[in-house]
Image (cartoon, rainbow, N blue to C red; front, side, top):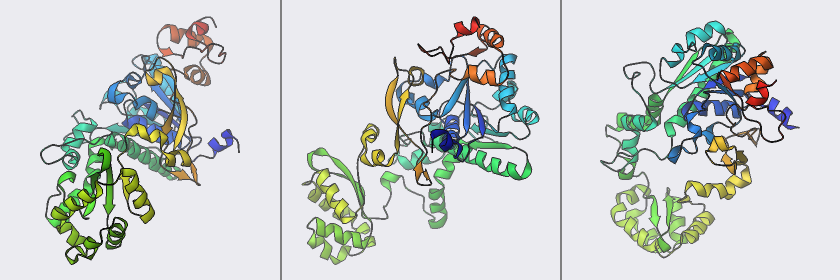
Length: 424
């Protein structure tokens, strides 16, 4: 099967998605649909999505969440730019946005306007809050983690700490994609699209719902994870030889026996005071220091080998950059080779690297990378031509600053620069 046939066999092949998104939440929604085969057209301002030039902790945003998409650069503050987007949407299946409430309405791109233009359109809005008393607030992942209980559960007592990645942005985008999928399925029965909303705060509440229910069931408030009473006696990070760290878990009585046998702890195995898991939990105050002292003599590699042989749960303490060379990810196709164009990475030149694919398989196959994150305006010319714009139209729109086409690379006759358009 060739690449074209493989693409046509993807679940959302033939579905057109137009997105006006930035940062992480909205782009994640489009990435999920794109990975599943949809044609996703990213409408960017003439200056480009702001995440193209973010540095610091945002340096990976654009290149992570915008693969398998096309880029068209349009000034939607001009009526001629809005007209272009309307033409794109007239034949689209999904529109996705994550701007401040009211922004799309002011541009003539709100749900009411677009559903009149295209009644079959599924309109996905990614917001900070679903409609209600909080929906006027400006939300960020960190904001909702603080107000939604996640930061409290993550940090030690009195030190709320945000999770180490954009959990609500990413999951919120995923729920936006799930909502779009549900609305597309319902459209098969009704013939009409509908509005879908996903929100950071409500997503965060869903993440901590288990701790809410813990309180409802037990009457006791959940303690922050670093301070919690563990359900298992051995379920912690251990500092071992050479200053290394490793997470170890022994979560059943059978595993306790295997652990004691493997590490020469016959005396502890025979101790009736800690024969059951619940007894060991109660004895953690004196038991864990003994185990820590005993394990200090082993390297992390030695402990890993023993736990592997015994089938016990363990994990090295891994940094994100270490995952580029993870043998499991490399062997299973979990990482795809990608070359990031300079304006998608903020670098002076293209970067060859690997990117993490969606964590699922269909028919035993990973969903592959079909296209690197696009350069700004990479597909402007092609898309406008498909919409019926002539070379003269393109020249005028480009000169007026309404659209931007990607500058041609040397020898690339298929992608004329703005200067070439002007002389067409």
